[in-house]
Every structure is written in C-alpha cells, then in structure tokens.
Image (cartoon, rainbow, N blue to C red; front, side):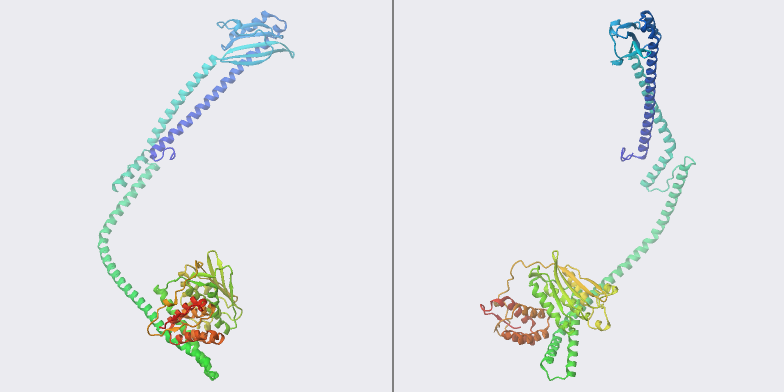
Length: 608
C-alpha cells in the first residue's frame, strides 16, 4: 500500500486495502461462478443437440432405408415439441438427394433453409445460425443424412442477460462488502485512531496532562491504559526534572566560573610549558653547537697525535685510543641530541638540491667502511644500473639516515656482510641496508623507533644514545616516506625506505667563483687544482657533518696517495685547523663546479 498510496495516512491505507481486497475477492468469485455457469449451459446445450440428432437419426433409419417419405416427414414433425432453437431439419437419401424437410412454423420458405444435396457430415456456423449434418447408418452402411438447422439468437440473448445479471449482482456485492468492511473498520479500529490523535495532540502541545479515552476492555483497551500510564510517568518525570533544573542552574553557574578559572590557569601553565620547551630546545641547540666545535678539535688532534707520534708506547697509544673513542662517542651523542631537539622544535627542513646518486652511494659506503674494517665486515653496494645518475633531493638527510642504518648494521653484526641496496620501486627509489647480525626480537621491533630505546646486549647499548632510529624515522617521514624494518633473530635485519628523487631536468649550473664573497680578513689566494669528483664527494660529506678531525685525516691520507693535488689538500687542512668549515664548504662547491675547467679559468676563494 505504501507504493500505491505514498505518504497517505494509515486510515487511508487501511481503507484502500479493504476496498482492494473486497473488489478483488468478489470479482474473482463472481467471475468464477459466471464462467462455470456458462460452461454448464453450453454443455447442456450440446447434450440437448446431440440427443435430438441421435433420436432423429435412429428413428429415421427405416424411413430412409425403405424411402418412406411419409414416415420421414412424421419423424421430422416430432421436432415441434423440442427446443425453440431448432429452425428446421431435413433428411437426405444415401445418394445425397433431399428426401424430407421440416420447417418450424413462422420461419421462411423451405428453399432458404436446406440445400438440394448433402454428401458429407459437418458443422457450419453462420452468424447466429448453426447447421449440423450427420450421417445415418444401418448395420455400418450409410442409408442417408440428417441436417439440423438451429437459430442461436435466443441462446445468445439468454447468455447476455445472465451476464448482465451476474455483473449487477457482483457490483452490488462489492458495494455491500465495502460498506460492511468500512463499518467494521470504524467499530474495531476507532479506538486505535483515537489513540493516534491523542498522541499527535500531546506531541504538538507538549501537554502531558491529556489522556486517551478507553472504549473497551480488550487488547486495545489494555494498550490505551498502558499508554496513559506511560504519559503519567513522563509527566511526573518532567515535574521532577523541572525541580532539579531549578537547582542545577546555580550549580552550573558556579561550575562554569570554576572551569573558567581552571582554563585560565591551564593556559598560563601551557604557555609556561611552551616557553620551557622552547628554552630547552634553544639551550640544547646552542650547547650542542658550542660543544661540537672544541670536541671536533679534540678528536682531530687526538687522531693526529696517534698518527704523527710513532714514539708512543703501547700503553700511551691505548689510552689515546680510549680518548678518541670517548670523543667520537660524545660527538655522536651531541649530534643526535641536536637533531632530536630540532625535530621536537619543528625546525628541520628538507632542502632539495641536485646530486650524483652513484657518487653519493659510494661516498656514503666509504664513510661507513672505517668502522666495518675494524670488525672485518665488507660493505657491498647493490645499485640498479637503470637509475638516473643525476637526481634531485636532500642528500644530506638521506646520507644521515643511511649512515645511521649502516652504523647500526656494523654495530650489531659480528660476521657476514652488510649490503647497501638502491633500486627503483615504481616512481620512487628504495634505499635498503641489510645485515647478517644478531637480528631483532618481536618485542624489540615494537620499541625500536622510540626515542632512547635500544635493543641488543648491554655492551652494544652503551655504544649509542637510542636516538638514531627515532631521528631517522622523523627525517624519512619529512621526505614523505616511511622507514620499515624486518628481522629474524640470529639471521639479520633489513631496514628500507622509498622516497621520490626526481631526475635532474638539466645540467646543474654552478656559481662562478668570482661571485663567492671574500671577507676582508682573509687574503685572496690562487685556487689550487682540485682532485677528481669522487674524492671531493668524500670531502663534501665530511664537511656537511662538520667533521673537522675527519677532514684533516682525509687531507693527510690523500696527500700521500695523490701528490699532484698536494696544494689543495694543504689549503683544506689549514682551513680545517682554523675551524673554518664554511670556507671549506665554499672551496668544495667551487672545486666541484670547476674541476673539469681548471685549465681554462683562474679562480679565487676567500677565508672566513
């Protein structure tokens, strides 16, 4: 009914359902009775016709056989007492010649009714007339034919009249059924509709003092009584709530004032906390910078002392080695704390610059091999040849993450090898560090990226701060990637991350050396011939890390193997001894841009 009468009331739907049901049922019943009566009438008519033809056929056998026309005429005249539907009849001899005829009084002449000859059986329907021809047999041999002509006009008129009567009776039955159904609906469902009206009044007026009237003691009466009790309980609760609300308004006012005071105090504390965090970050940043400068000097001079003083005994060498290890460990902790404080303060930014991916990977692996050599571990580079040689990205942050991963791999691996893999994955480049170390347990994998969390033995834990992976994870996330790990205890671990490094669109244009600012407190000198790009890449990496001691050691080592660039190494070492890291950075940038053009240009660099 919802589809037939959408949006109507329940009363309309119920009335429609009653009307439709009554009409359908009574129409079906009347139609069924009418069709059945018509079938019976037709069956009776066919039985009468068949009986008449059977009677005439049997009685006319002798008259046809002996060709007795008077007897045949008398037999046909017996049809006067039969049905009014018979218009006439005729008997034909076996050769088809008309023998005797009968015409009901009041019908037309004989020639209009009967053909002269009949030779076959059959039935012919012409308008409202029916002509039936039947063969008359005696002992299996035909002796003639009997033709019966009937007028069906009266029969059809009776059928039409009966159909009209059936239609009128059906319509009256439908109307009577609808009237009775609607009357019973009002009597039976009136209380329900009264209850619905009461609910509407209560909903519109919000007056819970209204009650529904009880009409009977049946189930509907129980429903109305239950509804009245429910409305009474709601009314009582409204009164109770009104009384409570009057008392709660004062409490709300008091609590609001208290919350306002608390909120004001929380804002003040939050401001103080923010200032304290800012002060902490500034303090850590300043102290880390202040501590790294002298610490780099200590580490550098300690390395020089170990290298240049061959007269030191084993005891002195061991003690100086302890000093060097402690200094490097302290420098690592300071760097981690500085990076972590920058991350907490949100001051870490990703800077995009073009760089040579192959040289970058080789340099990064070389920087990690010094520790690996002490444990006899090879660091293998597995780089896909399909990668572009020149890409764009923040190579300093990528190197920081890779060096941390390689350092951890070296720390937790005693035998086997370490693989630094680089391959394309869709539109990204995957950097992976795989080792054959002790592995990480399931519990360790849950905590490995937390700040100050460490896994492994007590000895290995003492070698770090627990901030490296936390810092690496944040740096990778700043590059819109995720640092992932998988590990099997006793077999090794694998760390990887996928970042977007677009290929460099065009050849990088390095600034002309004459554009480099030259402070007045450093004399202008002629730029010496720089070493090849792969050697300068190591110097750039150490410069980015601020590793003054490492730069000086790098100068000493390369001066022994590449004497043709001795002047460049001497200048770089002097700048490192004076802690002029900015000038070294300028020197590397200028040398990288002009290393292939040194024979055509004379360039200068200033100190500062």
